[in-house]
Length: 202
Image (tube, rainbow, N blue to C red; front, top):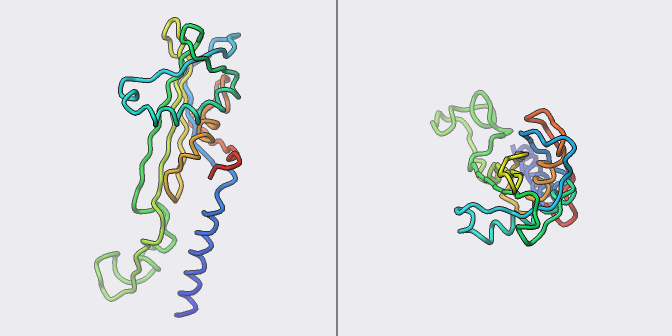
């Protein structure tokens, strides 16, 4: 029994250390909508903030800084004066933390660790809480690009990423990278996209 418990602790320690090292890439589910006008090149843009987003200027500034590298890579150029912009870009984000991980290697048809009664009902079996495991986190970023003159939505894209751990602001940039990876070509939605995590992000 002691050897078995040591093996479990060793596995948990290995998972924890792997998480500390940080991912080298993240995989996201991306869905994109809209038809970019044929022959129209990306150009100058300004960020657009909804009234509800204007009440959280610091968070919106964080989103905008995280999205800017992906927008630049797609061919857009940020300008300060709205009258100089051909496009407006609206950003959004969503996060959710589930205190019960969706994946539990010790959950089986007969309770955790594969024997005993149902979890939490007793019955004389052996049970062990997995409180050592981190939360299951869902992160999503949203990008909407409009023609600033007409207000028409030209492109809408969303990227979601799930992982064990905590919400990481550093993952916003690779999420935006994934969301705009296929711009402006049409693509299957949803689709799986893996992008590298830039140096200094985890």
